[in-house]
Length: 277
Image (cartoon, rainbow, N blue to C red; front, side, top):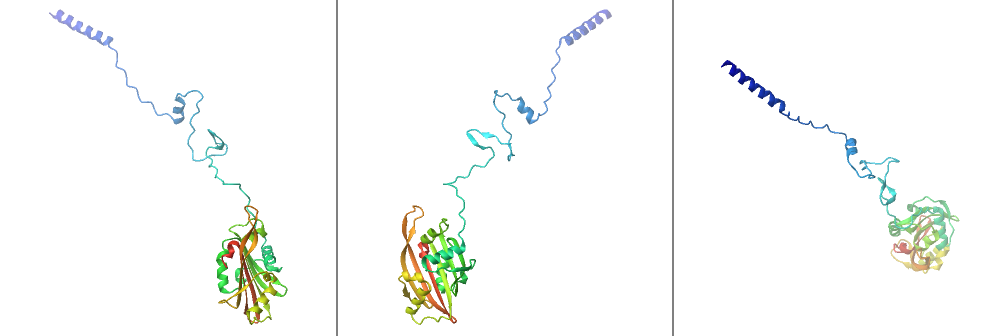
């Protein structure tokens, strides 16, 4: 009885060992791989041969760090697009000489050649009736260049102001004066009494500014002293076509008294500046 039980126990043990020996151990779970750097991951990507790697984004460029764009042989990556320019780029035109502006205008329309004592005066140096000053002050702000200064003509002293160009100058002073300019001149005549009538005033005007004899100056009322006006045209030059043309011209001149002296003034406006008068 005891032997039979022992045999049974040994048989069961043998079967147990055999089952364990034939069993395959369960596979172990794979641990997740640690994250790799961007450069390593990028190197492991399968790319077609010859395809360039994408450029890393950047906020700006350094010298020698630009890459050419496809279809753009000249512009480089990161460079600003060129600003469109309509027409040819030109160098800025230098300003006219202030003294020359004052002299040239006076020679052209007033028949005098003043000596410019100081070519950096102001419009306040001019002795003009208030209504005339108000008319010209707004228009000269639109000019391409304005010059003012103190002048002398013989023993007579005064001031002058010339504005030329509608917003810009052309580089040709005489053409700018003919097409669009405004010149204002006043002279103080010491020891000369204020004229007693319009005829004497007109005679004093034309003797002071001989060029005014060419205009049909008509007297006006309501001004300070004696005031005369002429509306006409003057030869000009079209700066676009370089063809001769005519432009409107207005001349306003007058005589007034200041102490023991007479003030003889004149304002000439050409082109768009004639409208101010």
